[in-house]
Length: 259
Image 1 (spheres, rainbow, N blue to C red):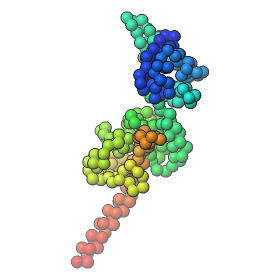
Image 2: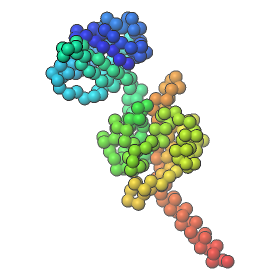
Image 3: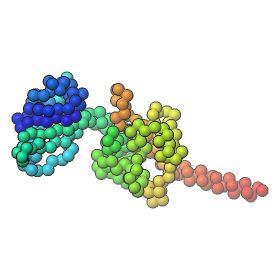
Image 4: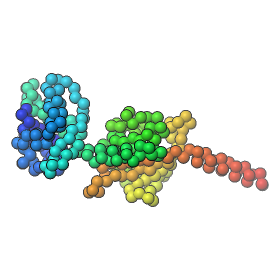
């Protein structure tokens, strides 16, 4: 959603996406003051951002802001704000906002449930940014959540060059044929989770000698059935694979000996 306000905080332009975001029709939204959307500490944050822009200082982009909707609910936004000028004179501010309320809620819920969970997992949003990275995947990958969250670097766990992880394909809603082509026949649909896929593969960059990983990626949908995120779980099956290889070796050895 995008809107423009003048220097007094009056909204002078807005796109159609603002209607869905705020609950106000565009006609009723125009002319209102930003006080309608921002109150208390949220309004103070907006003023601080505006002051920095007017002073020519850098601001964190994007930043998080909380906004009051028409129905009184408070939603969390990821926002970018820019100064609007004419002939070098500031005349207002342009805002671009994306609602991340569900993402934040999912992240908090996962944190409570899985922080002590022994299975490595991560979650990404529709923009392919990592929103959750649990302690177990920190141990497996050697990459901390602080370093990973907010980036699209999930590929670093598996590959030396950037390419989609399975969760990236799931969150984009790509076809089964595309997923299978990407993993060259190594993946299959999950029998337990609707819309999920699982696969096994060897990743030479993991650990000292590489690791075999069984991984499953599943979509997370909103109430309307739209994919809003994807979660991927990983299981280190290296020892299991080594046991299988050893068993295969001894079976062959015994078979040859009996001939």
